[in-house]
Length: 243
Length: 305
Image (cartoon, rainbow over all chains, first blue to last red; front, top):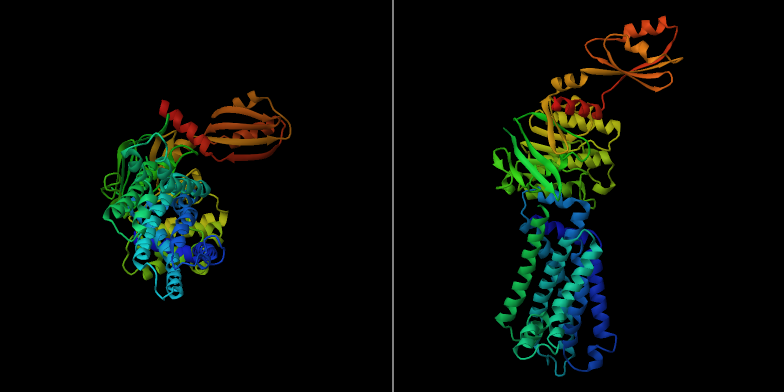
């Protein structure tokens, strides 16, 4: 597994992908948070990172599929998947190596955003007047959410040889899981306990819950089991393809 | 036995790609796996290396069941897939270190150096794989198949698409490797099998049609020889048929005739005399090499008998 992991990490930084992803992410988030008035922290006049934690998942809905789309689709297209699967590697090792590598890249591009926390901390009046607990919770939520997006992306990438199809499928799946259940719960057909139940299947419910700064084990369990579920599904797809 | 394949069956939908294929290969043998395109060579090899799972049957490599204990079996196989997939954006040493790392080889640095030397990659080793010529890519493919020092090498069309020089280089490489290891390689070129190995397994439409030493196979093929002659003016075909030993006469175009005759009985001197006595001149006389097509026709004929 470690070999696949290192190969993918190397791949990100020896090609342009890693740098482009980091640049696109930091540039778009930076512009939205500090320059454009609609979500700008400076215009908002309130020492909070709420708009940051609102925007990042939306950017990730498209950025993470772009990171993960080539993971298995690329290997299938070039035939190198045959190379990997005839080495002493199990499908699980291949999938986990790829998931963890993509996840690492996402964590790496999130790292510089701690500067925003520092900036807002300094800008607060009085200095340091912001909800640090909420921000820690939000970062945990963001990390868990990006783990799930990565597993969805790798899963979509296992289904096809085409990277574009993998990208679109991953984006569609991520959007559905992120917003879809929440939106569905508003349908008039679901009343009583049903609408809460359906809403709780969606990522946004759990993400918003964790963002309050209350790290609930139920939320953590939700994210981890969803992510692991997609990883297992990916392993299953790889195994079935050999039939 | 290094390789044991037992009544392997693989179906893709309606089509039976591999139909009860069985053979075994002893340690240190080089065996050619022959067949036309689509005969089931690659599918069989993919099953043998654990990439595909068969519908029925069993494969043992070095005594380890490939289906039951896939990961361990793969440790003693070196496999060069058809079309030689490689990571084109990697550098040669980077790629070999990556593959070697998967096998957790001790002293990997030394081993990488060794395989680079064996496969003659030295002069190109600073290049990215994507920049290499096809012959060198094939060497990289062989290098990664060799890195774990496998007992069994499975090479799927290792020489396809190479120019004659590269072809000879890769062949001599396989010959050298085959001195110590069990090698099974597939090809659709008959001469290649003759040049490289002592035994051939021939597969057609998923079935094994022959499994024998090259000598007795060539004998079966050479039972009849084909001869193409060109004359300055046409002769009636009956004139040829009168010569004893000629089995079949086909006129390709006026003056050009293809003859089939028994290999034991060389008809060429008699033919020459006959043509001369009929007051014609032979402009050209060529012995036709048996193409793989003829081999198959012959072998399937033998099967029916």
